[in-house]
Image (cartoon, rainbow, N blue to C red; front, side, top):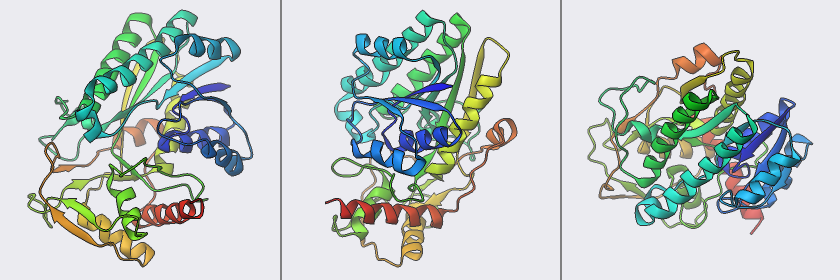
Length: 338
């Protein structure tokens, strides 16, 4: 059975491709390499012993996308193809709306044209904004996200709900909390281009002296240590959830399905707790400085993922220190490639 994975050489995409191959799915990847590098394809093959089919092009090129569907009998799609830097999305909102929404629509047009179903969308907890209560479950009211990136995720969800309802399709929306860590082989991990936007890659680059100091944005939040709290989920656990969600969709007998799942650990960790856990796990120091809060950052967000455990048979299993240990191994691997 062949699954199309768009953005399949990116951070979460590459780990999900590994889990799909390990579960005997055939995989076709489309990735324009704007958030990844070609060597990831070779590393996927090294990890799994299997080579996915790879097409390097931008999904806005409809004619090339159509050729992929002509060449393969696609049974479903997991869509990771999106720009994802929150700060950059504020500076370049039109680029984010064009890339994240037009590419999604192009894939769905092919699904409609060919009468295909089984679509999984890479969404985000940003659709909740600063929730009024914690933990956040799937019934928590959505709020307009602060960033253009978050808005594209919320709009993408609405597009998919309309798509499923109008054309009788099966879709799943997976709302991630904060993915961290790397594959146990140290051959796959987060590959930020330029200055990292996420906490953990900045921590690892600071520990390896690529960056002088980690900037912690605010220590005056109403939390135990004054720093913001997030739910950090190990990327391999997250990838496995995609396979579970896909298998559920494939087994569904209903023509129209709109499933929504939070994917997180159910536990919040502050920025300082993450830094300290990294130092403990890897016996290295991470120098940091406290800076002013960033506009738009929320105080706390962590998941209630009971629905995923109940309906998918999935739960996050990897503790924070272990996830952070794998991140450091990936950083050391990257250093050998310089």
